[in-house]
Structures are given as structure tokens and as C-alpha cells.
Length: 108
Image (cartoon, rainbow, N blue to C red; front, side, top):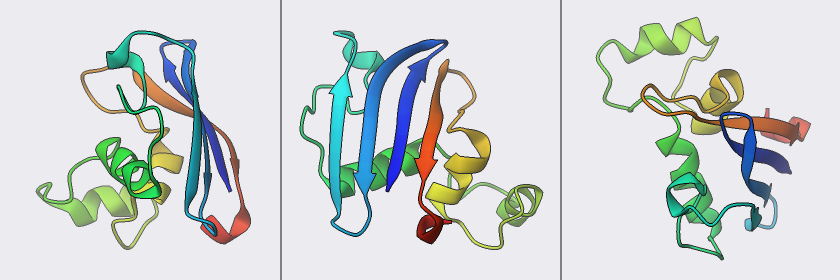
């Protein structure tokens, strides 16, 4: 289970609950601004949408000297969930981030 609030600065934009075992995602949007929502216009994201969202909140897989960035995060492979946990999903150039509330041990 993964629970997080997708934040714009200090405001909750979207509540996200993802069940890795059942491959289900539930969200609750707290804004009408589509640009601030985790999944934009999509009100019923799939688990694959969720995985894409996680990767969108990471540095690119093709980043130069990727292994150095992974090492700095304590990782030995590119795992979007683990990267998001360590970086809070912060991406250069925006004010969105993830306030992670719960990650079950099997996801770690």
C-alpha cells in the first residue's frame, strides 16, 4: 500500500492510494486546476497511469551519469518508487511534490 498527498507548495492537490498487490489506485482531487492534479483530467487512473506518474516525478532514465545520481540516493538500480520516496517526487522547475504518508514494507 502506498498513500501520499500530491502537493502544490503546502496545499493538497490530490490524495493518492495505490495498492500494489491488487494493482488498484484511488484518488481524491482537492483542486479544479487540472495542472495541479496528479492525473490531470483523468479521474479514474489505472495502476499503469500511477506507475507513469511516479516515473514522471523522477529524473529521466536517460540522464547522463545516472549511476552517480542513483548512488547518491542509495540505490543500485532505477526504481521510480524508491526514487520518489527519497526525493519526495520533487522535480526541478515546479512546486509540486509528494507528502508520502504510508509505504508498506514490501514496497521498500
